[in-house]
Length: 276
Image 1 (cartoon, one colour):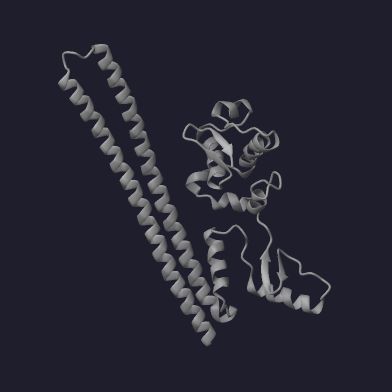
Image 2 (tube, rainbow, N blue to C red):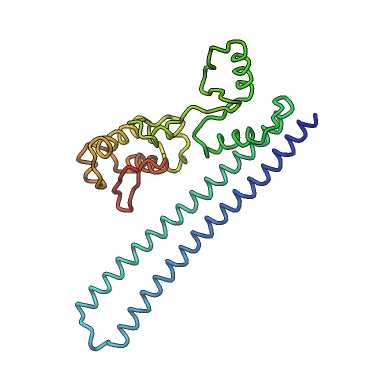
């Protein structure tokens, strides 16, 4: 009973700390976007002031044609800044919603862990962290069930010559998880398609209604271009379209955004991509 009470207190303490950290992260992201919006407003006012000063000080010397060209350039730059501001606002809303959803999921996980602590008798803080991390998506490896670990250990004792089966192996008292697909990609083990679990780990606002098979088709084509054929220059939207890849429109762009969210490729502001 003392172990169970200690586990509940530890889980409650970790839950409070996690909620506090996530709330701070949300506040920092919102503050960052507010600062960017303030910088945008300052830039637009600065452009207007510079143009007003030049027009007022040299009104008789300005060439009308040059004035129109300068005005057109300022309008173009201003429209670009406005589009950036709209993108920042959309990203701000997306990030805030994502962090709040993750915070709610983490709190639910910790509450469930506290309720099950008397039966599971979880006293090791690393096991609690593994459960929370697996739900938050901070680690791609799967968390190991403590009951499954006990059964594996008993099987090993009964059959010393037989290695434990499943996704984990017991080595010197430590549980070593099987390499995830992301880990295998990091080790350059060839083309490894995305799993449904990886796709679902991406924010719904990013993936939209895109299908796993379509994302993997784009990923495979990019993998062959960069990794197999050894090309290093980024592919533009036109280049990818020539290869028969459907990456235009909301659903088409979502395929690339999913790969970017999973840190598989880098995408520039003009849509050019390159595998990491």
